[in-house]
Every structure is written in C-alpha cells, then in structure tokens.
Amino acid sequence: MAHEERSLRCEVVTWVSQDFPGWLRVRMADADGQSWFFVDKVPVFTDGQLNADTRLPAPVRVRCSIVGQDEDGALVISTQPDGVEAEDGQTLFRVRGDQLDRHTV
Image (cartoon, rainbow, N blue to C red; front, side):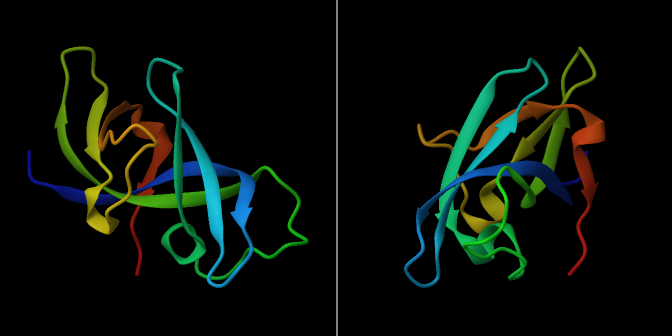
C-alpha cells in the first residue's frame, strides 16, 4: 500500500500554553478505543480556527500517512508527516477508516 496522506480527526482537550504560537493537548482514540494524547503548536492541528475563547473539546486534525492495514481491517497510520508524536513518543497507530479524511492543502 502506498503511503497515502490523510487527516486524522482528533479533539483539543486543553490549552498547554497560549503564548505564541499556542500549544495544545489533543486526544485521539485508536481502533481499540485507547486514548492517545499529542502536544504541539496550534498550526500543526489547525489553520488558525482556534483561540482562547473556543469552547473545548474542539475538533482538529493531524496530518498522517496510511502505511498499512492489519488483519482486522484497521488502518495503520503514521503521524510523522508533521513530526507529531504521542506523549510517549509513539507515531504509529491503528485507526478505523472513518476516522480519516482526505488531506487538503
């Protein structure tokens, strides 16, 4: 399977820092329902649609690449296109196809 770029739907759960450019903590649930958390700059997750008054949780996306599919039909994705990793350093995740959107520039 070619590495196809997509956007993984996630949600902002909290602001880590509102100092420019802003840092967010974002949650994603994988195909097994396990929650993973990412902390990164606002521009990594959104194109400026968030501000301090935004009600949380709020939807955001993480750019990812589909790198495979497992025997259960879950897609294996990498969050490396923008260097995003979970708080424990993980960058490969099993997700359902309905968690992904086509990536648009």
